[in-house]
Image (cartoon, rainbow, N blue to C red; front, side, top):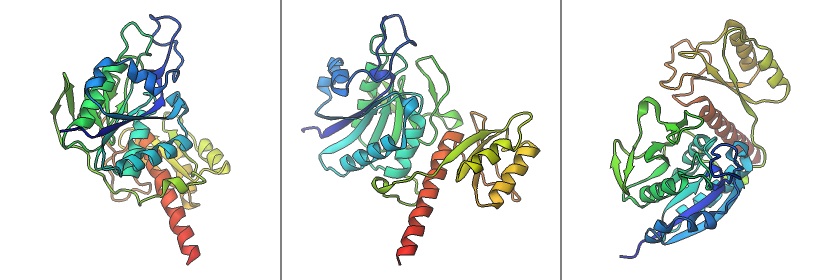
Length: 321
C-alpha cells in the first residue's frame, strides 16, 4: 500500500546551523542550511517517503516571533486538512521549541501528528544529532494512531503541554517533568509509555491568520527582595498581562504581590506559575491571582496571549452586532 505524504516544514535552528570548525558545538551560526539540503544529507530518509517539504522560516529560535508563529500555524492547518497527508514534521531550534509546541497544540488542535524536532549540535559537528532526531520524528509521524503536537529529541517523545528544555548543552536536553515522556523511539520503533496528547480546548478557537495586533504579555520572577517597580514599569509601557514565575507553590514577596494586586484591580490580567521545574501550583480557595493550571511560565504566557486574543475577537464581534 502506498504511504501517504509526510510534510516536513523547516524553520531553521541549530539543526540547520554551521560552525567553522567541526569540533565546535557551540560557536556556530544557526539557520544556515535549507530544509531540502538538510534532508538530502540523511540518506535513510529515502525509505520513509514520500515527503512534501517547505521552508516556512529560517531563524535562530531565540528570535522566534509572533509573525513566524502565525505563518507556521497557517501552514500546519492547511496540511492537516489534506487527505493525502499523514502527519507533519517541523525542524525547529531548541531554545523556544516548547513555546511553539504549546502554541501549535492550542491553536491547531491536530488530530494528526505534528512532530517538532531539533538538534543540540550543528550539521558541521563531528557527530551531529540532527539526522537521528529527524529520522525519529519521521518514525513518530508515521506511527498509526499518533496524534497531537509532540517533540522528539534524543529518542524521547514529549507532549506539547509538558516538554521543557532543561539543559543548555547535552544532547538529551528536554524533559517532561513529573508527567513523564509519551514514549521512546528505539531503532525506528515506538515504545509508548502513555497516551497521545488530545486536542485540549482550553482556549476559544482563534482565526490566527487574521491577527493584526498581539497583546503584550510579559514574564516576571519572584525572588528575594522582589519589588513592585517592574510591575508598574510594564503597566506604564502598555502590557496587558503578566505571568509571574513565583517561588514554590505560587508564593510571592509581599511587595511584589501588592503591586500585582493593584495592577490586577486596574484591569491587568495576572497569572501565577512556578519557577520550580517539576510540579504545578496547587490553588487555594482564597487565591486572588489565578494559577496557570500546570503550565510553565513561558507556556502560561502563550496561554494568556491566546485568552486575550479571544477576548479581543469576542469584543469586536459584539461591536459589529
